[in-house]
Amino acid sequence: MAAQKGKDLLLKVDSDGLGNFTTVAGLRTRTLSFNSESIDITHQESAGEWRELLDGGGIKSARLSGAGIFKDAASDETVRGYFFNGTVRAWQVAIPDFGTATGPFQVTSLEFAGRHDGELTFDLTLESAGEIIFASV
Image (cartoon, rainbow, N blue to C red; front, side, top):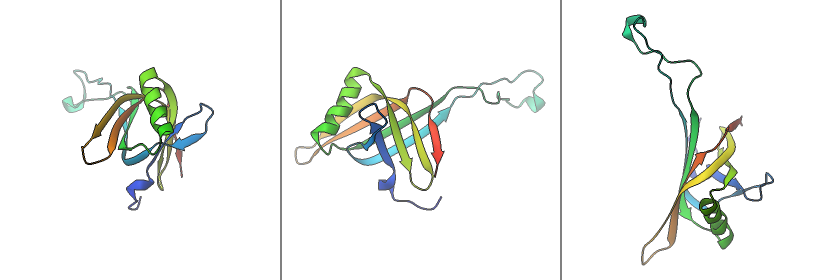
């Protein structure tokens, strides 16, 4: 993958529950990480006493995080509502020249900050709550 503009990594949410994705707020930074736990199956007779892992085992998860400013009251209300209601909703991350990851996430962290001489900012974290589908470009 060639160098890309960070602003092209888009975080979107299915705000109406019908599969219509809209970009979330004015995100200045965004991160998507995929994780997989391993299952250690090492035993006394493992070759050279090296660790062995179970192929295809373990729990997979994804975490989305972002920071920025809300562009309008509607995006603020949507994200805030999802957090306080514990809503699991379909979210989507578009990774330029790579693909799109889509699946259910829950807002697990929502922080607000502001300087006396600056704008109000927010940070949010979303944790996967089901299968994440990846579609290549």
